[in-house]
Length: 149
Image (tube, rainbow, N blue to C red):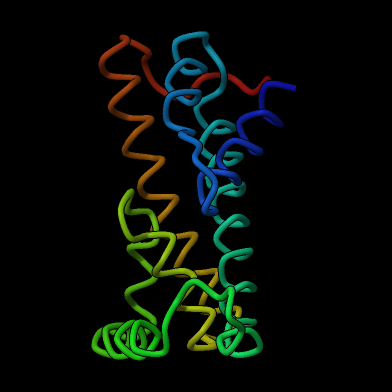
């Protein structure tokens, strides 16, 4: 149940919902949960949350002319231009606390092929969670990978 909670928190953190999976992750490290499984479920949840952003991005053109739509044509144009400057490689930065969610949304708007989208986002998020786990494990004195649950 704890890993499911981590997965769902990481999923929510990757969407536009306010959630911080690193806090839960850190607490679970200090409680002795498997570092491997913590990394796996956090990365999987966060990557899947970004896929939801990509799906929403692919729907932008359907709704951009509605009165309630929160993004202007000029903002969309600027986002597309910025994304084109670095291309799909910018999805490696989808983990950033500020702007990462927007990058994955724009990746969807730009219709990055799904395999490329998922692989690049997963690499960036996986590296981020590996770093967070390493920091917390070092600070709390946890040594090496924990045994499987």
